[in-house]
Image (cartoon, rainbow, N blue to C red):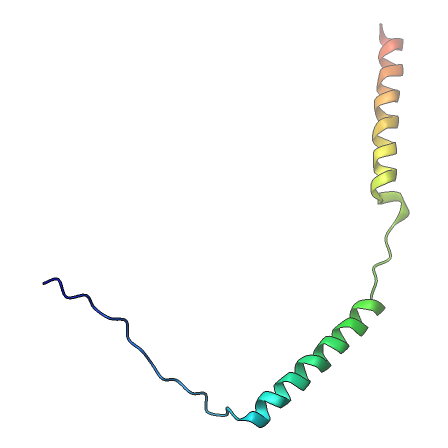
Amino acid sequence: MFHQRKNKKFSYKPRFQDSETDNHRKESKDDLERKWSEIKGNTKRKSNKLFSLPSLIIILIALFVLMYVLEGYIK
């Protein structure tokens, strides 16, 4: 009644696990990281200067100033 069930244990070994494949996997990972850094460095996005953060903040401030000036003409 109070007997706890134990988790099942599996002794799984991958079919192609060798020290040779582990070494190949390390080389492959290093090669992949090198290729990724090359690709990442070469494909920088060209950003539009009009939609950069500082320009958007300046446009927002200009709009508030324009609204304030136009509000003075209405009254």
